[in-house]
Image 1: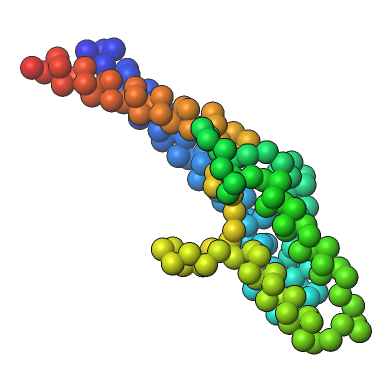
Image 2: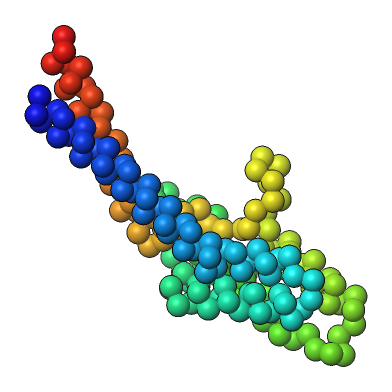
Length: 167
């Protein structure tokens, strides 16, 4: 019975710990990158958009999110960090080409294009910032996923042993 309770406690503690780590990673990412991408998409002027996009790009570059894949088991196009980074970087570079002689229409079109680049328009969840899945836990996403499934297994084994002993 002690083994069953130990397995159950270890599994539950693991799940709680991994959810806490994922939550903290999510908050950190949103504060330092995701929020700035959203603000860049919402910017009403080129200068505001450049400033917000620069902050997000600085975070991406400092945290080495320029290449790799956020997939846990199968690589899929939406998990490609290099494409995501290059898309954001090229948008920023295009903003830098605009100057005072650029017409208002061109600036407006560039802001619309930037918004379309940075925001997903999904009918299920509404509008959201375009991000590769699990980027908030990258590069630890694989180990977090494996440990989560292991914790679920331990919890299930603990419950099974307790149930079996109660028969």
